[in-house]
Image (cartoon, rainbow, N blue to C red; front, top):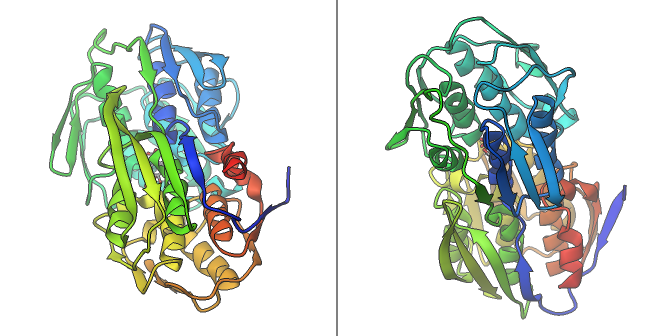
Amino acid sequence: MAEMKMIEAAQHGWRGAVDIPGDKSISHRSVMFAGLGDTPVHIRNFLHAADCLSTVHVMRALGSTVEFLNENELIVTGKGLHGLTEPMTVLDAGNSGTTLRLMMGLLAPQPFLSVFCGDASLTRRPMGRVLLPLSAMGARIYGRNTNNNLPLTIVPTGEKLRGIHYESPVASAQVKSAILLAGLYADASTTVTEPYVSRDHTEQMLAGFGVRLERTGTSVTVFPVEDGAYRAPEEITVPGDISSAAYFLVAGSIIEDSSLLLRNVGINPTRTGILDVLTEMGAYITLQNERTSGGERVADLTVETAPLRGVSFGAEIMPRLIDEIPIIAVAALFAEGDTVITGAGELRVKETDRLHAIATEFQKLAPGSIEEREDGLIIHGKTEIQRAQASSYGDHRMAMSLAVLGAAAKGVIIEEPDSVNISYPTFFSEIERL
Ligand code: S3P
């Protein structure tokens, strides 16, 4: 494991094409949902990264067969919607909030006991947001201390869960998905209402498995699945991850003389907030070759260097760019004027407290460039940037954002760079190639 990674200032623009690796959210779901079917599902362009492998290990421990044809292609065969079996060991979700929260929803209705653990970061993160609504459905889940942290134990109740209408205080796809998955097994329909619509990959993919869902406004209802109605498709092709493309969208905008083609990027409207914000900042981004792949919209994106200007945005767009705040903050540092980000309190409970992490590390690289607020950041664009050592806090998105910042300025030495393995293991080799 490398302790530090040295990123040098780019000597010339980044030019050429990048094949964006598979979407992390969709990769998780493809393995989980395929593992609930009873026919083999061929998954292509799967993201072979630590987070998604956590889901693979958990599904295997529950009796699903997962066979890798190569790193990005696998065949998943389940034993049916009621075919999961009691795990013999503690289930390790690693660093992955998606694995843990979605699996809590899936395991709450099962007639067996399961126990979860995870790494230090996941162990600090709040699970009450999932435990509470699942408990309202009748589930019995026990966590550590008043925050319901890991380790967590799910105890069978011997009864069907109850369908509920849950008004979620947060726009979170992980919370919504956990409830919808539990709803597959409930005695009546289950509705989740969110303050704003979060990513809808669960809804899109479950519909492809024959599950009945209805959306009205920011509410979505799932109906319990009758025996035999859950039908796995023969194949799922995972689109490229716009959250991974985001690093190149910003690098291509701020590194002088750049021109990049980002191939095969998912453009599901619940994920494209980054395109809206960068466009408003003045970025030169185009969408080409729009198509549908595995029920999701996909396009090739181009980006060229552009003069950026500061913008303001808040809670309303947040769910559509929740994972992109660190790299948007980097773009803001190179923009003319201030960028004001509000309604971003959720960032405090990500892999690390990202608001604090961004503010602290930007102060090292560009003193005076940033102000941390309770629910956001103010970034003063065009502040003088220096070379410095900065921490990723073991957070993949911090590591990649710092790398882009360093390449566009005077270089950076990144602590705990291996965190990129969580979502983009080939990130450093890709930027070295460019
Ligand atoms: C995800 C949902 C988001 C996002 C995470 C992946 C998902 O989390 O930050 O990276 O796959 O459902 P929240 O639901 O906590 O907002």
